[in-house]
Length: 367
Image 1: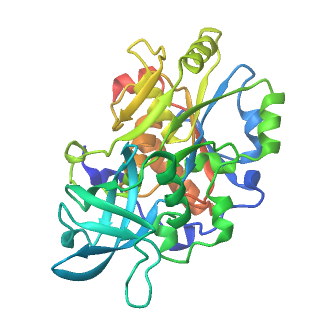
Image 2: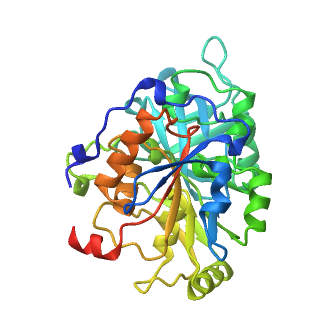
C-alpha cells in the first residue's frame, strides 16, 4: 500500500511532553468500526471490558540505552560519537544506531563515558569494538564486558532514550526516570517504553482484578527502530527491525483457555499485540515463543490472537499507525484521529490512549 495513505496533519500542540497525573487520569477514546468514537477516561477501562476478558501486558523494562563516547584510532584524533543500543545479540554484543555513523568503520574502538572539555573519556569506563556496519547508521558493538557486568556499566553510564519528538523539545530529567517506566516493568532490555502501559496505576490494576478481568505478562524488548520513519513510498519496501520477545508456555495455555471460555484477549500496546500474533498459529492458538520477531502488520493482515487493543495515538506515516489501521480499518482510524485532534487528545508516548475493536470478519473480507 502507498505510505502516503497513512499521513495526516497533527498540530504541534497535540504532542504531549509530560504524562497525565496520576497515571490513570488520561483520556481514552473507544474506537469501534460499527459505532462513532466514544470519549472516556483510562480509569473507565474496567467497565468497558467484560468479566472473563484477559489483558496482556508487556513487562519489559527500559534501560538507559543512549551511550556517549569517543572513537579511538591511532591515526586520527578522538571523535565524539553516540550509540543508541536497540537489540542485544550476545552477552557482550549489542546492535545499535550510531551518530555520526559515516565516520565509524569496522575495527574502530569506542570509549564510552562522560566526555570531558577536550572530548576525552575515562578509558576505564566502557570500551567496545565496532564489529559490523550496516545500513542507516546501524552498527554492531562488541563490548569488553559481558553479561551482568555489562548491564551494570550501561546502567551507570547510559542516558534514558526519550523519543525524539520529546527529547528534541526538552532535556531528560529525574521525573522521566519514573514516568517512562510502567509500574509492572521487570525484565530489563527495552530502549523505548511500551507506552500503552504507562497509563496503569496500582489502583487501576486492582480495579481490573475486582471486575473479573485476568492479567497476563509477556516480554518484548522494544527497540529504537520503533522511532525510525518509513522512507519507502510503498509499505512493501519497508524493513522492520527485529525485536526480542518471550511468551512462556504457561501464559500461552492460560490465554488459550480464556478464549475457549468465551473471553477476549486484550493486548495492552502494539508491542504485546505483535508478540501475540508472532506466537499464534493459523488457528489462533498460542504457543510459547522465544526469539526475534520482525512482524510488520498492515491493512489486509488477518489477526489471529488479539480481540481488542489498547494503544496510544501514533505518528503519521508510522508502522504503528499502519498496524492500528489494519486492526480497525484505515477509514475508521482516520476518522478516530480527526475526532481526537479536534477534541484535544494528547498524542504519542506521554499522551492519551485508545481502546480499539477490530473490523468484523464480513467487513474485512469485503475490503
